[in-house]
Length: 162
Image 1 (cartoon, rainbow, N blue to C red):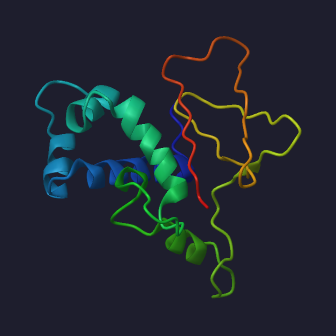
Image 2 (image 1 turned 90 degrees about the vertical axis):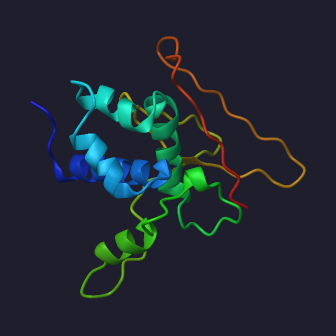
């Protein structure tokens, strides 16, 4: 049975909202195309028919970056790394507040990369948000490996925030 938890439904909504924003046509057309496919398709095939064949490799990758970068105050953030119709940080911070006071954190979990190895387990289509800093004039690096060869669709996005 499929996972229908609130977090999964919220993630699906966010991905569809992001994809509709990035499509660049009136959203009414996007929603119509999703529920009235031109061919007998559903699921990922329907998403690819509406949003393009690169939906898994590009759209989902950029969405995971947008989840972190949107409204983070980083100058010149590429449009592909934003949620144009929502300020998710603002909404989530407010929703996660207590006693009528705004929350103080954006709930997207990040893991610092320091000197010890970090293990991140990813499901298909999953993402991990790892943070590190490199002093001016220095070089930083990381090694990524898995228990087997990484899938051909595996990708890494490195974003400079300062």
